[in-house]
Length: 174
Image (cartoon, rainbow, N blue to C red; front, side, top):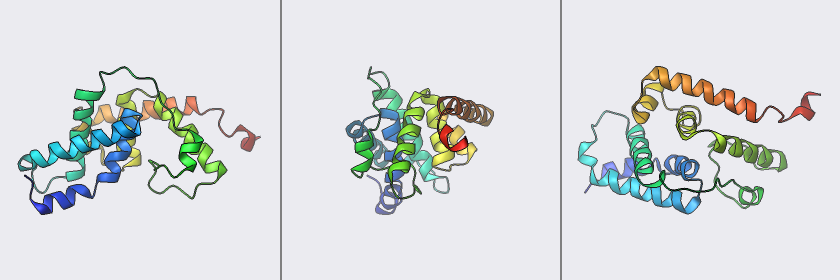
């Protein structure tokens, strides 16, 4: 079992792991199960963690690998966040999101839907790099690909998001 200090440090990343799990699974209860399994694996294999490396990136890698192993193979319908879910106090993936008013709820809902349309490898890289703020080298390690691939996937993900959201806010530009 993991030592108490490792457990304390690992639990600091609970919210970030849950946010990614929600966007991978598209289901709150499955996200909770995925995060729980991630922590079980992290604690079980804590002896493999190399002190001095980035614990958050290591935890994200465990979460992603667990998702790919157990959850990705299931067929599921895309599930989108309803405005009602956001208004009822559901967590947002944007850590520094402003207070929820009608406009911000609509923007979060539209962005959530657009993100859900992205292929998993684009969505995960974009969330890790842009939302969680991980360095590209760590994102590459988590995803098991070169940094150049991470950069190109971020670019392509943003281009697709622009396409999905091209009509968003036209009334403000006119």
